[in-house]
Length: 174
Image 1 (spheres, rainbow, N blue to C red):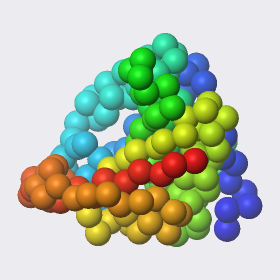
Image 2 (image 1 turned 180 degrees about the vertical axis):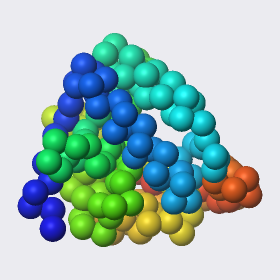
Image 3 (image 1 turned 90 degrees about the horizontal axis):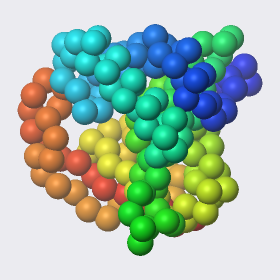
């Protein structure tokens, strides 16, 4: 049931207050086989460093963070990375769409996706892009929500166990 889950954008200071939960979600995702830039056995310190860099970029205005919370605990995330190029003020990338394994299959990912699209629209970012592991739950979610798959690159990234796997690329015009 997702009625008890709140979806909201949080600022960099709030993200820093929740860094342990953000780290746990990313570690849980990798442990569950999600290829989200890390390999199995990733060190906690590396994930802390990722979130600290992300929060710094958020504070500088380069990205936005939306979270799903249940009982005050962050259980899901999605980022909107704003294209910094002068000729791309209309574009953003979506990333770190993660839901803790204990909270999956409850529609939280879909709600996060709707929220990040709405945020992008409010920011006049009308072209969104993302990539995901081919044949993943993410790929099915994006396709079901009107994202257009425009290509696949074989061996683009390593799976969590170090095997080259294909990546699917998507865009959505708002």
